[in-house]
Image (tube, rainbow, N blue to C red; front, side, top):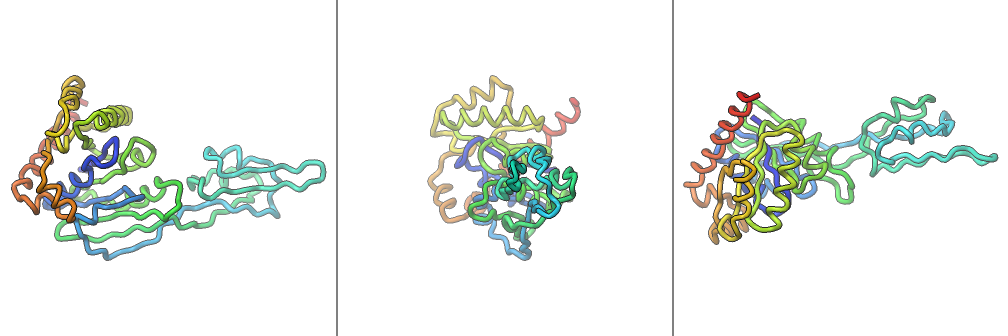
Length: 289
């Protein structure tokens, strides 16, 4: 079972849910795909035993072979290559923008002159380790990198589906989130009962429905806002899987990097129930399909 934890906005408690759910299970692996600002390790405190540089293949042109036909530029969907053709005796030129390259390899494959080769450009690192029965992987994107999906994909290559996999996705609803949750069996959307929380939950729900991943909602700090999030979930027939109250004790533990289940062991049963409910919904969905 691969469970992704996502949210339409940052600061809702996504990592809190991911870390505490993992610590409540016997055989779990946490994949922190928020590579721009990974923080699951602050709560899990894993011992990092592996560190691997992450690269993306980017094109390099052999100007001795290139005739500046522009085929590479036309096939690049991301604007990473610009070609200035020869004109009136002026030699052509090819410009490559590595930070825009997604490493798809189309330019190399479709260059009629075979003038494109690929070189590795480091975009970050992937680190792996564990704590007790919890295995752990995260990525760290290099400062200044414009795109995180290539590193997220490399982090996800470390998924071990022999147990329960919990993916801590980036916040939002853009490409990094899609890359992180793709392939999940279920997605938990963490929100808060505020107008911003509701607005971004609606966006996240639309994404999950579009990519056809079963999902449910966890409401964090459920007792500080209004009831419009629950009303929306009721109207849309979305299961509210768990409610976490606003608690000074939980907030203080969070600020110290202490998981809820360690501060208050009674929460372990609540997170186990969350997992059981997820499995039940997933089985219902599989049966209906």
